[in-house]
Image 1 (cartoon, rainbow, N blue to C red):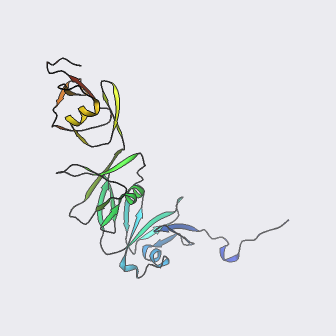
Image 2: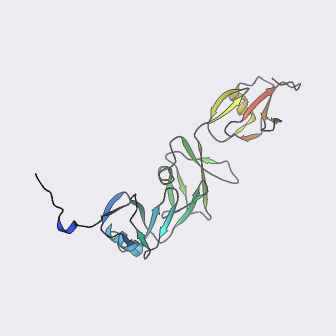
Image 3: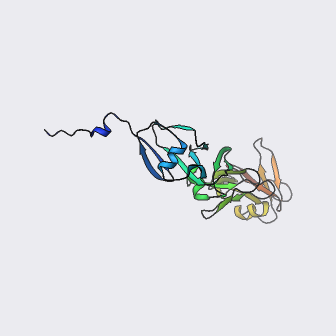
Length: 224
């Protein structure tokens, strides 16, 4: 019977794992401060870096002298940034901190765990919401906190009980009428949750939401 003995320097020791910038590290110290974590990754001098932990969802900035308990069921995950500044943004009202002036759509999708079935869009007050493409990036250096949201990549709405899958966003009455095939000169109506009808003029914009119902009627007012 062959017996394998544990080497003396590993006997009785626990090992803890974490990643920085995608690289995996191992240590026998259950608790380390951020300075040691950066130094182990050869990111020196540590004072020149910001260390951010990915919480999925959310992030948090780790102070250089702040202790990090690595005794966790999952390896802790960190990102380092050669900077003395951080920038804030939200995704679906969850706060994030980042160490560079811009963040790409794939990075956002990764740290916020946004599935491929959803899109990410920039919530803009005075302009139409901007849906991010895979090649897009968000400028975080502007004043204030950028607010991002997610939505289903395609939203199902109904015209006379027939389903239509549309990209999230705002549509004019004329655009919706063309998509639904509303007869010429007919008026498009939105059916409200209370059963009332709201006329959607050709130039009026509507932000579509999942499950909306539309009908149409001829100019005389008779539903069709």
